[in-house]
Length: 225
Image (tube, rainbow, N blue to C red; front, side):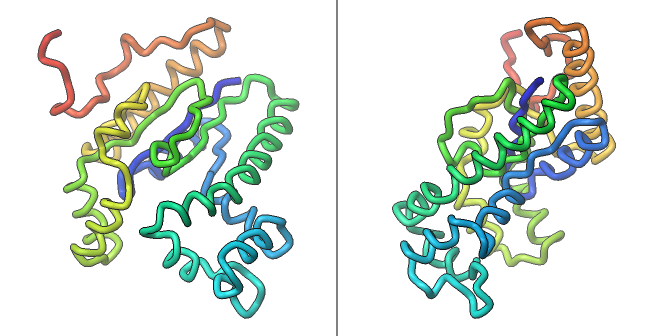
């Protein structure tokens, strides 16, 4: 079994990478999807959220009013921490259950944890590898405006709410440059996965990327070597 955490800033191309890894045979564990599951009306986390934040975050049909909750936690670090303290243990339980069930059937599974806010959450990075989808903030802002119809102010606010590109790169084992065309990005993913899968199949203790394609953006590459 191998576990990879895949992360990246908003509009970084992370979903493109995740979808490709699924096509290649990895099992994708989507943190956002699990986060939605654990706050359904029949789940204990929703009752805890209502108790802490009040009934104003519960919609008339008994589901979580995500916008109301987002309005509370967006610029309030203490409120966000309280929310994370409620949801993260439940997310962890679901994640561990998925891994246990799948690996029991296929011990050599490659799991990819799709976690948008990995760096923000300051988690214990209990993964074999961390892959970061990387595009500079100005490129991502342009994508948000052109592809998602945001205003420049909305796009900048979304980017500013996340950690910097530099902080994200600091936790990375592999940085995938997504400023390239989609076919070029997919080629990077294919080669990285092939090396990962090949080494995994040979039962080596360590996966080597030393001969893999350079995936760090040009501006981050050392000029000393």
